[in-house]
Length: 231
Image (tube, rainbow, N blue to C red; front, side, top):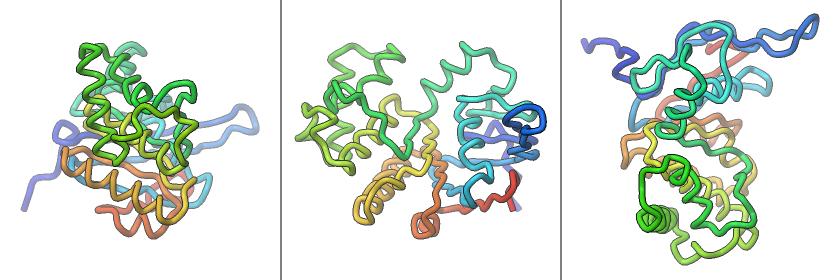
């Protein structure tokens, strides 16, 4: 029998996570002691009804928000008590985000949008950043449209640029919140296949929040959530 995984072995994990939203009589216990693991090279879908805590958990795992209680590890590093500077540095280097709406900067080209995370990390020269961004756009099938403004791309193309941007710093973790929710069926399948291929090729852990049962069924792992807990 194999030994159980520990936080140090996993790309991402959490334990005993609690999160409240609101205040006073309107305060809601959104997450009720959640535990979760994400393995490298696998795609995990978190599914459940609206309001069950899926997106809240994703934002906590991506260090965009803080839990009232519980532990979160990224690549074996305990992040729950880390200060904001340390959390920002880890998020920039190790986590890539893909949301339902692409959030591209419309006044910049596809290439410039993909370069944004690399500029923030500051490890590559401008030439190397441009070359990497061009390669990532080629990987997502948009190498010939790298100079186009975001507003000159279709919805499916914009979401593919968003995936390239999420991969810019070669993160070990990709967190995707309804990444196909704003796309038609053909583009949904294309975006999902792209996420899976790139993640598996690079041994990245993908955590996907989705309401789409067809997308969820094609993931390696499905974790149903209800009322702030996995069931």
